[in-house]
Image (tube, rainbow, N blue to C red; front, side, top):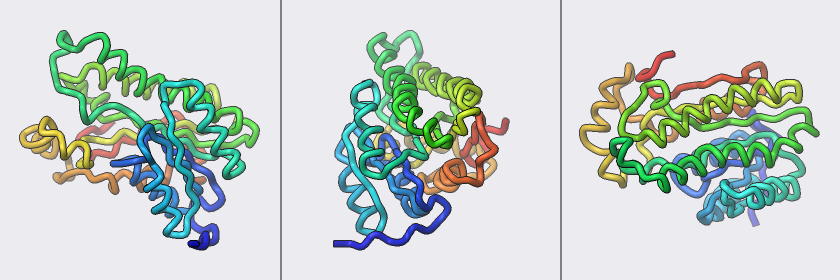
Length: 259
């Protein structure tokens, strides 16, 4: 059996939940937090055990749990499992979301069912996950909620109205929650990536070719954005280094958006 390594790093002794951690960017987030010393609950509808096992193999602490972020019962069970396994919850990364498999299309062609599905995962999900962890964070008088939005909110990107609207709601939710939870020592911030070269986007032809090249051309730093490019800002928001930062949005997209 692999021995757990001694607590070290900027997140030593902290406990983090990452939703959507089974693959892609969420997987990178989970591993980045673990590398800084956090115990990580890898939450996903898919099987996240391979990610948790990889963290444990490196000497870290990790738990995998299947979670439907649109369900009150499932998100409550996620928070309870985190406390049972590790004793506290310091960090919530609301990463689970629908994007890479969505078709770009005029807004009048988006069906009501698809609109509701995007809103359920991308907006109700962070709402329910934050509700699920807030009692524990209040009892600690400390916590970090990191919502994941998108640079499209600041561009008014066309042809994905449901997605862009959902991420705009996440930015608004962040600001309102930061006001509501500040006195409890809970900081709420948003990380807003640009178009990221993850496995899911690279496997979708809609996000290749001219779409990607035009996105790169709009950046001050003209290259693809990788999941690893996001991890430094994520760890900053999760760590004590950002303890006086709340209600903010950090856009990580190579300078395509400047606000």
